[in-house]
Length: 94
Image 1 (cartoon, helix red, strand yellow):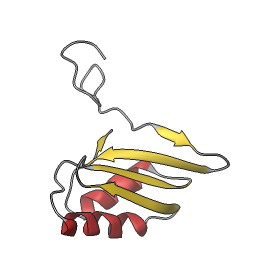
Image 2 (cartoon, helix red, strand yellow):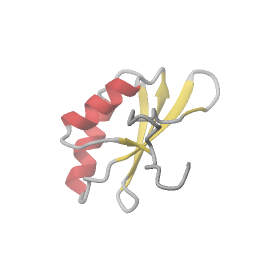
Image 3 (cartoon, rainbow, N blue to C red):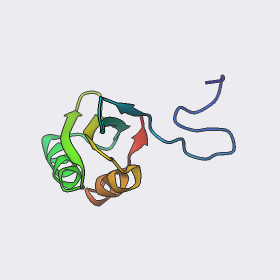
Image 4 (tube, helix red, strand yellow):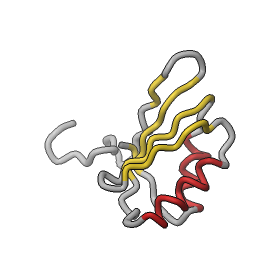
């Protein structure tokens, strides 16, 4: 990242895609920053929406860092972001 460049952004103002980390086989993990979460209710809402997305096996949310790690098979970034949006929050690549 160059000086003055916003994390999670690429030149031209396009949003960067989150890094998908393969965990062996088809299982992978995607991490999002969800800065709007501030309480256990927020965590529960995000977790419930993400758990309903096909392919999601596990959702790990750290409220202190506001990071959400989604693990599963064939994860779809668009579907995961839509689920977080449905819970009422914005997701950013972490």
